[in-house]
Amino acid sequence: MRRVSVFGATGSIGCNTVDLLQRQGGGDGFHVVALTGGRNIALLARQARALRAELAVTAYEEFLPDLRDALAGTGIEVAAGNRAIAEAAARPVDWTMSAIVGAAGLEPGLVSMRHGGILALANKESLVTAGDLMHREARKHGARILPVDSEHSAIFQALQGEDHAAIERIILTASGGPFRDWPLERLHEATPEQAVAHPNWDMGQRISVDSASMFNKAMELIETHEFFDVTPDQIEVLVHPQSIIHSLVGFVDGAVMAHLGPPDMRGAIGYALNWPDRAPLPLERLDLARIGRLDFEAPDETRFPAIRLAREVMRRGGLTGAVFNAAKEVTLDAFLDHRIRFTDMAVIVEKVLETMDRHHDLQDEMTDLQSVLAADAAARKRTTEAIASHQANRG
Ligand code: NAD
Ligand code: MG
Image (cartoon, rainbow, N blue to C red; front, side, top):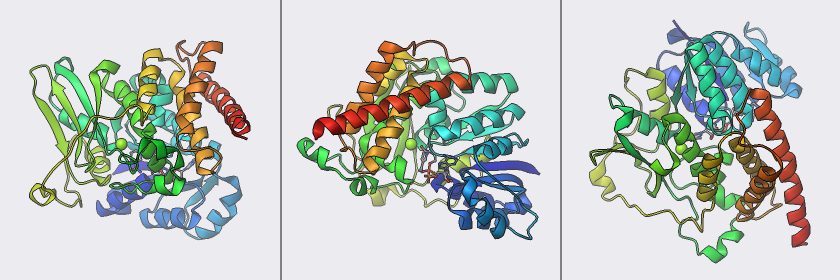
């Protein structure tokens, strides 16, 4: 029986993963080793019981007693804290879902690759912060990283049976988010509540705001560069408000292969779960006649400076991605707390990239997890200072 673990099981991607595992037999179809979550203990306990997991882990030590109570008498082991999550990742499995949000997802993914197998990677931050390291670990242990982000799953599927040398360009689609049509001069007024309301995809709060600011697309540009070994110049962004075409690949002969489907993450998760085969998935079937039309436009980089920043990050390489991601996470928190405005996020991230690039050798090769975590911590500190001085200046 296939052994599986799900990191970030209680999140948006995690719940969809658990749903697919249940539809494919649950505890009878899989040996579920570890499920991890955060504060939603009731949900984590429900999932662990339903899938008869070996182990349930909450990221937060203070919730351990609750988790222990919720699973009392089931024989399911419980644990808490980041160490416990990394230890859960060290238990051998054949398939791991990496769906923790943010830089916290990096270590469990790295650890889980040590026993080979498949790492289904929703946590794009892993490739943005530590692409080199992820690839090195995968090669060393014979692990296989599969994309779960819808765009990258689309590209991966469009590339099946193709020769890498035949790729001319990759076209990443972007919905453009809720502010695509807002007048530019009003964009600074956008609130977290408005940013969270994504028109097509039902996602976690943080990635929803990242979609509205296009920081999510910026991260995905870097993720594309890392996953498919293409140069920054080979990656284009195309705004496509309906989110039906999940991305496209252009080949040297001018042919373009697109991947289409309803906006439902279970498509990409299910592909990674069943790869290299395909299995029936509970997705709404695409009805193009009913949809009627698909629209496209070029991205507006004045409105969304994150795209330009991502190209700069790819050009610099090394630890720049770790700084970019950390600065983005800290400014995102400040925006969610109403401490800075929507448009301030990119301004501050750019400032942090510039000052840190001047003072550190960010373009040096990343040696190990420690160097990535150190760059991450330094960037968080620098960003917190930049936010404080930004607030002071605004009075
Ligand atoms: P989410 O916020 O819904 O869930 C995050 C999960 O991580 C939860 O289980 C939470 O408990 C856990 N978690 C949060 N902080 C943690 C920490 N510090 N330590 C350990 N666990 C922690 O997020 P999501 O939308 O499911 O996204 C998960 C990942 O997948 C992100 O990297 C995101 O970019 C990526 N992704 C999501 C979608 C989507 O549609 N939701 C699409 C593509 C990629
Ligand atoms: Mg995506």
